[in-house]
Image (tube, rainbow, N blue to C red; front, side, top):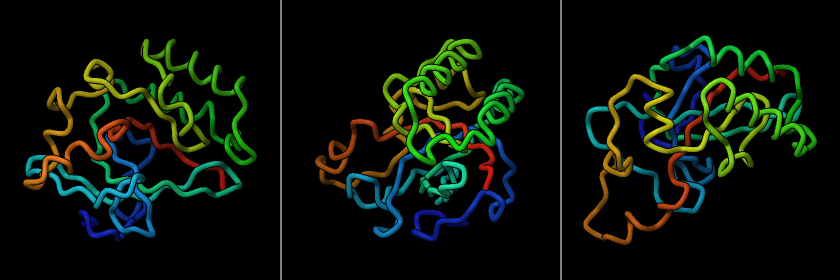
Length: 181
């Protein structure tokens, strides 16, 4: 089902409806399932399903985001719909994203969840809505049982360098919504 094989598929190819709340590692498609920093694609421990997910963003610009992602069960799915509806047809990211737009999205996150996008706002575009990743944020957002150290979800090799390489900003929380194009 797209697990770690570099064969990225869209949500509907997995039978998943938008909006989705996902925990993910960003990938680069030309490298297969490899993280953005070039670390070979992760293999995950049993217990959670991770998929190679492709998602279209930025309105009419049709940017593509590639993720090794696990779908989370949101505590309040109606709030995901509010985010999606607010930004659908905005073309945010088509010609960049201005500070005023980021501040408006940030205010929405704070109002809905008491959470922030201070460390991840650069990923914001129509269709992909980042939320700063922390154990506290995950507890507020989803019903899933996740380890405090998310790296415990990954099968690392014997080389301790594999765990260190790419550890900063490895994990991301996204609301994935419809894109207008």
